[in-house]
Length: 286
Picture (cartoon, rainbow, N blue to C red):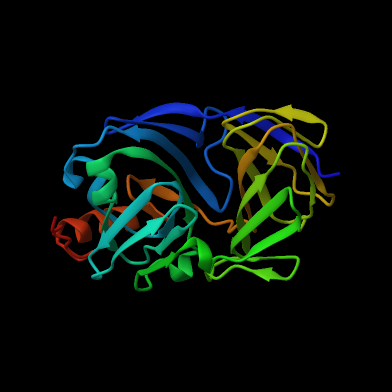
């Protein structure tokens, strides 16, 4: 059995007036290489709003991949490369920011006007230094484009990137990793095997379950030791999870706001390039 290193609860964080749950970073852990941040946003939109009033407006990124999984509702992505797409519940938006891109992320126009439940998870994946200054790429996938591994009718594992039991995710990655959404019904059981060298964590969105010999609850993050052994999952309720597992990049990290580089000089260059418009310009049209 692969031992548990820690179990922590997500912290409430105010992001520009939006209250979110943040399991990573937390008071004791700054990052779990190559994963830098996890944000979980769930809210009921009141409706009768203009789309420009909801979500996050244009902002730049460089040096990592911001990834957004849409759990409920619809997310509208626009960027300075000319991409303009809406991804619905069950889909994912994976963006390799590379040397720079400016984008916005908002609930869809329909959701803003009609109201309803909107829930997403965004996590940040570090990019190895050799790829940080490549051109940016936006990689959207709807639910029906993402393959699923399902050992029985109580376990469904959606593989976004990497491979599990012969099921390959459609999104290419820049360092070895497995990223998946895992849904389990009450009384479901699943034995998960991950390469020993990979840093592995599970963020549990809801429900209660037993991970190995430990009871865990909603909005908790379980981090595992780097060692051989299976991870045993037993759901006590219907439960949704995010599985992040990846080989550590092992490089120095310097971050500032929306930029993740390897040293202070590169951060200063990123700030300058963003101010000069070198990461593109996005003018939203509503």
